[in-house]
Length: 199
Length: 37
Image (cartoon, rainbow over all chains, first blue to last red; front, top):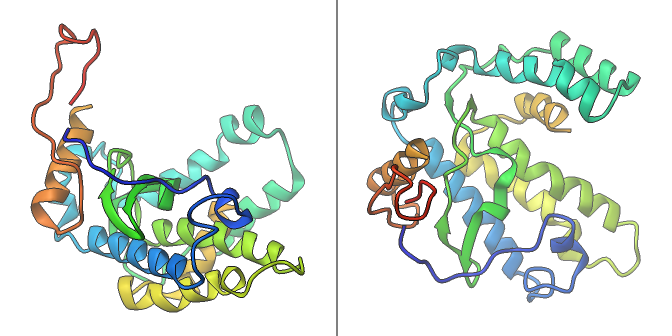
């Protein structure tokens, strides 16, 4: 693999707190980074016939990928060994079952995963290289959108409670929410389910 | 490893998303004792 010059953003909490190139950049530049990253996701989602193009990733679960994802979440590994039993988690899993998203075509494709901004190398604030090597499982495309929104929403809301929080940080989630449908066509009513899943 | 290689290659071929150029896949482990690309 060829070497690509670029820089990576700090991990998710640090990109909001400060002390790094993303957080300390001029006000509008992080927004450009967000938009260009969402645009990358939209382009990846636009690859035609992903079932054929990435057919070598098919392990027999393409059409039921979301069911498998949720089964994994509900598995003993996650509920037991990782975080232990939790009534909150159990209620969340029950809610996901009860609100299974059947209102839109599945549009299954390789899942970029939870890497989001952290899986992109930037030249300034534009993507210089995207590492798609984590594409190993299949998911509905809303999964990627939810993953990139969720940390921004959570952290910007938290930081908004602090007086020193700057406007661009609180507008981060709003900006993403505004730009994502135009790039990806994702529907917000459905995305809510994926937010809960991602949490 | 071969899946990662092919995914990056296909994304580079089918979109203008910037991805690192992948050249070879070394699967034997005889060079670095690990597979790499």
